[in-house]
Amino acid sequence: MNEEKEVEEQSIPLVLEKLEEHHADALLSQDEMRGTIVAVVRKEQVYAVLEYLKTDPELAYTFLVDVTAVDNSQMESELMQFDYARFMVVYQLYSYQGQCRVRVKVPVHENDLSVPSVTGLWRGANWLERETYDMFGINFEGHPDLRRILTPDDFQGHPLQKDYPLRGRGERESFNFDKQNA
Image (cartoon, rainbow, N blue to C red):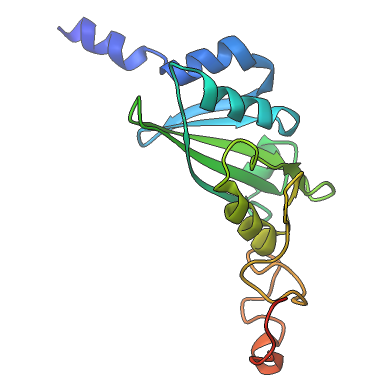
C-alpha cells in the first residue's frame, strides 16, 4: 500500500504532462503549490498555451477566473529567476470537467510592458485586462478597448506598481469629483 501511495505522489499532473508534450519549448518552469498547478511560460507563446489549455478536450480549462499581475521589483530572487523581468502577468484558469485549477504566469520586462490579449479566447478577459492595464501599466496587444477602468482617464501612473508612493501623488487633494470618465 505504501508503494501505491508513493507512485500517486510522484505522478505528474495531467496538465503538466500535456504541456510538456505539446508546448515544452514554451515552459520556463512548472510547479504545484497548494493544490494548484503553476506553469511559467514565455510571453511569445502564452496565447498558444492558453488556447491549448482551453480547447484540449481532456483539459478543458474553459473558465478564466482572473487576470492580474505582480510587481517583483523588490524581490531579488524572483527577478533573478526570470532574467530580471519586473512583472509577472498571472492567469487563473479553472476546469469544470476536471474540477482543478491552473495558474499560468508570464514574465514581462519593464522595457516591453505588453502581452497578447486573450479576449478572443474568453470575452470576460476584457475587464480583467483593463484592470491590469490600469493598475500595473501592462498593455494587452489586440485588446478591443484598452483604457482605464478604475482610475480617471487623466490619472498619472499605475497605483499597484511598487514604485508608486503609498500615499499617492496628491490625487486626493486635487481629484475633481464632478468630472466623469468619458
